[in-house]
Image (cartoon, rainbow, N blue to C red; front, side):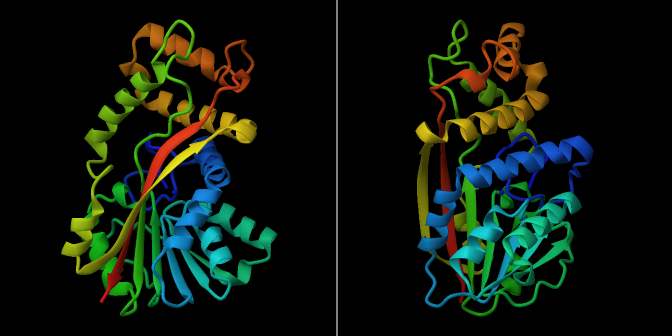
Length: 292
């Protein structure tokens, strides 16, 4: 799911209070691509779980990022077309390039839009709207939910997917000399993000009901990936922790910051890439809500 804040992984840059440029955008896009690669199986399980009576033909992916959800939905629903919406022109270009490489460019339309604006672009009348790791970035989520409700075809489904904060990668005793470092890093990031994104970690069920939806299902998926994915997990960990470091370095003790920098020094002896005990641990919750 996309997002120049410290919250990673990001699945779409849906809102207007950040605009990533240059190397920052490139780094963010790389994390989005790694997120799609590492969590592909879990994303597929969510699309398979959705309570749909018939296959959707018109899908909207809100805050699509570089396309993790878009391509999972195209694969799951071979007769569907997807309108992929994001604030980042760079991410949308990356998505279009992928669509061409996969031979599905005729099934994807990209729309650059700031979904925090009161007036949304014309997204048609979709059967399914997908929003992965994007709703909590909205400055006005209640208004956004109403906009989704009004856009959906009668009987259409809205899937909201959110992550339970930052993924964890290191075992609790790591690293040597600074055990528990990762938890302290994430605690600092959580405090910072609570100031900027009050809806992260929210229960979207009541908000969906207030916007006129009928919630038909809620599911939490536990993610714990390691083993044969070591190389991808290592690159993912470096990308995520580098972005977190950039946001909270001033909130860490000198010893913790030094230990984190050793982990992020990919050519150093304590590089996170040299570890064989990395895993991706997080939770994803999905709410499926229908416009009745």
